[in-house]
Image (cartoon, rainbow, N blue to C red; front, side):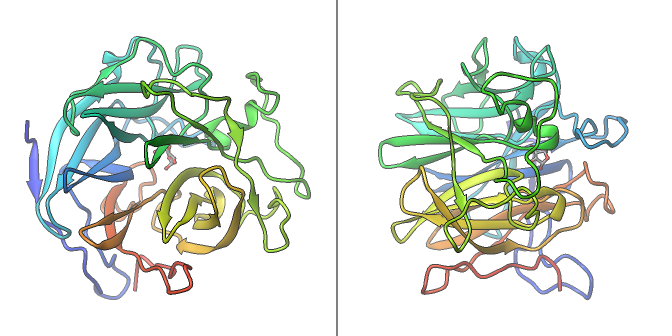
Length: 338
Ligand code: FUB
């Protein structure tokens, strides 16, 4: 079902102080765009932001989303189609609250939607749902992925292998899993200790579980040392995303409270990854969350900001803009505004 269609502008520059790029859609609020090309068409799997009337706090309770819509487009800058509700909270047996940043993958003609949500005990888990089209509807498995926790799943396909990356601190609860078991207390390293790291694992052949234990993804500085917890401009916060360019693996992520999207480069999907620099400078709104994908021969950054809602942090809109890899493999930093 086509709920809305809209054209948009991904070119710049806009007037002084205004966003360079238009929201991809304006009839709903959308965030955390995970982009993939399936059958030559671009599909975006965003969060669907709503005003739930919940006061803002550091746990992100105000991000109380209830369903997902999938967006698609045939051409960059072309018409955007909203395919309507692809999965709703009430269709998930283990549902508690807060449908946060999702991602999707395709294998053998089946499409998988991966989503973080709090279970009935208010613990974030990763769910999986599947369907026969890229835009759903998706049918959720009755239980979360075994052994899954925290938020922001993203799936990277490398040949025949699929890898899931997860994690987010603060409201994303990663700091409650430092022993491997859930601990309701928040345990953070000291500023001069290594930062908490995102986790990853290869997916099983049926795409519904981890094929191996989740492991840390090491993010190193220029001296080969793990980035420290107090290095807020560079340490991992949430929104891990992996893309491959010229045989190298790029891990990009949000630094959360310093509001950057940054990236690190490695030689394989497991890392280690060495920090390189900033992909996207801070945007309007607290969160910064992105994906990177190649579409029709060009690379794009998919991101969000809160410009459409006048700066309301939990009412965001997804956007896209071109991303450039330099000849040496580094990425040119993007400013969302003039
Ligand atoms: O959209 C809810 C949460 O906000 C996401 O899971 C985080 O990455 C942040 O964007």
